[in-house]
Every structure is written in C-alpha cells, then in structure tokens.
Image 1 (cartoon, rainbow, N blue to C red):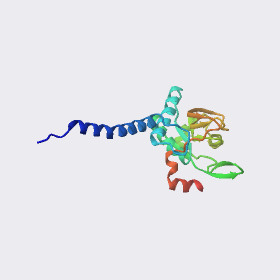
Image 2 (image 1 turned 180 degrees about the vertical axis):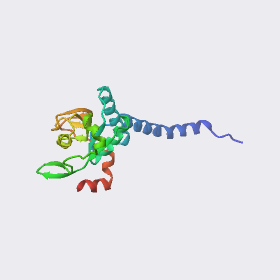
Image 3 (image 1 turned 45 degrees about the vertical axis):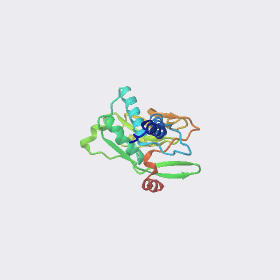
Image 4 (image 1 turned 90 degrees about the horizontal axis):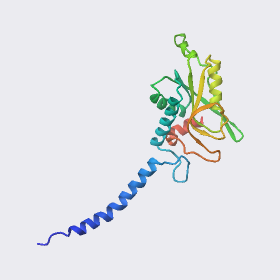
Length: 205
C-alpha cells in the first residue's frame, strides 16, 4: 500500500495559501492606512475610516480641555457625525438644523430652514453654556458660520466650531477642531452613507 505523498500536499497548500495570505495582508494594510483622497477605485471611505476620524476629533476636543452642553450639527450627514461624536464626549445632547441648497453659479450655498431655535424655558440654562457647532465637511462653504447666526439669534453666545473634514479653502474661518485637513486641490472620499440611494435622493431636494 502506497502512502500519500505528504510533501506534495504541503507544496500544493503552500502554493494556494501564499496568494491568499498576500491578499489578506494587502486588505489589512488598506484598512490601517486607508487614504482619504478619492480615486477611480474608491470614492467612499469605509465606516472604519469614518470612526477613526470621529475618534480623532473627539480626542482633540478632549485635549483642548473644553466641555460642551450640546452639539449643534448641520443636517443631514452632520446628524450622523454628531451622534457618533456625542458617544465619545459623554453622550451630550445633539441638535440638528436642517437646510436646503441653493444653486448659485458654480457654488452651492446652504440656507437653513430654522431662523431661530426655540428652547423651552426649562432648558434655558443651555443658553448660558458652551455649545459645539459641527459640520461633516467644511469645503468650501460657510455652513458653520450660518449655524452660528441661527444660534446667536436664539440667544446662545458661547460656541466653538468643529468639522470632521476641513479643506484649506474653506470659508469657515472660526473652526477650532477638525479631524483631518486636506489641500485645496484635493478631492476627498465621500462619507460611507452617501453612497446610499435614499440619501442621494434626499440631498437632491
């Protein structure tokens, strides 16, 4: 009775496993060092990358030593960012201001539906506290500046601004914290939820 050639099986296993291990290694390198710039192969960042950006932003805020009573975000993606950021900052309350876009030449500007935020007198103490204004991406508009106007009209006076992504060409000049800044000539990947058809349809309105 002839015994199976063990060495042959080992060689076949090695030949098959090496490419698999190589692909796994490339995948984990991509996960760890996922670039932010969009390319023809990848237009959207992963949820893992997004979480790392939010965590980095939270760490910068904590390092700054400031505490906030509320996060005020620009809808709709800002609501997702604010909810995740809040979880890293002690689950502080989140307020979302919705907006519509107005086409104006080559620049798309945002107009908020809210001219003023009405808060019940029971929570009027928030107006004396520091709040954090959040935009998912400041490029190149003045979203945070417009949010600040609404909040000032509502009686809030002490506020800081932050963005998950910040372009060097942004017109928002008061941004105190950001997770990642990129060059004016770079195009970033879109956020993971932006590839959802439902989200695309909503943002057209």
